[in-house]
Image (tube, rainbow, N blue to C red):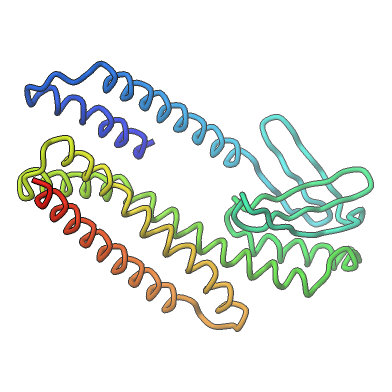
Length: 261
């Protein structure tokens, strides 16, 4: 919600700044700001409802059964009735999704739960104790555990990034606006455009670093190597690369503007 509030402030900052500078902005600018505000609020409410839905879902692993409870449904699956325990990866969902199936019921475990790796290992132990170890393939589950560990590290990185995102976006917007308007002498609309472009660079840096780190860390975990040092190196390189691109684009924008005068 903090990110949505920052975005709303920035959306209305632009038309208000133009208005306060003595210009007469067209009505379309305020219409655009209004519709962008509605979109931001709708996406914020939707994401909040989705996260509340996941947070309200509880999984309890008991001695002889697993129970998945939500606000509208409760599924109980005895371990001695489990016919298969498998995991799948989907392109649109990060991390593996675990499926337990029996002749009468089925249960899924989405990759949004804390300690997913420990949960998968616990389910394997419970099935083994109930004599249902033929319900899963040990080699396949070994690869799944590595995917789950990599996903957990990625989730922690995302959580940290989201805490600093509002401040990063605000700082880069301010720096981009001040540099373009007061130092490069851009007209106001170009300065605002460069400031808006500057807001994208924290996300670009993180997405690039997180994508590369997820692939590399999975390989490191497969070989039994601690990924901490490699993770730090990847994000340092991603930050340096994105900063260099940002500076080069800024120099190019300044040269292009002044050469066109």
